[in-house]
Length: 182
Image 1 (cartoon, rainbow, N blue to C red):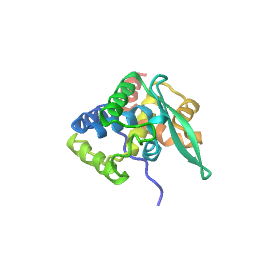
Image 2 (cartoon, helix red, strand yellow):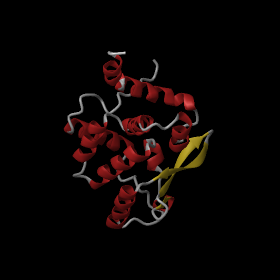
Image 3 (tube, rainbow, N blue to C red):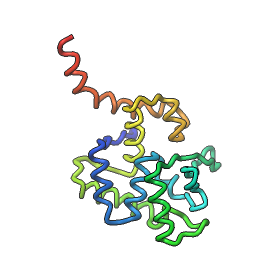
């Protein structure tokens, strides 16, 4: 069976999901980071405090390529830098501590489901939706395939075609409105 592309979350749905998680500092942090960096859950799971350079605003994530771990840089905006800094201080994390390993993969996936229901999102949401959201929003802002592939660590531009088609469907209403009088 072919892998299905998840139904993308709108900006409003994503904002609602993240707001719903604000009661738990860990989930709020990982959801915010995921929505603004677009990495896979496994990439966050291996991030240690020493992999985050808050002064430069970057986080090194590890990606498995041909059975070798390759480091990829994720850009952190000012909001993420402050959230991460506060979390590290509050949890008293040391350089070798893992930043996002407070809970298991399964617990994080269940939390996505729980908070998406709390946010009244009408479709299934998984952790991958954060990546999909990030990429879709970059397409909407005019980023091209190669830029997005480089930023997200996609090895193949072809992988991004599925994300681009969701942008096209988002444009349907505007296109119908704009072309009716042509």
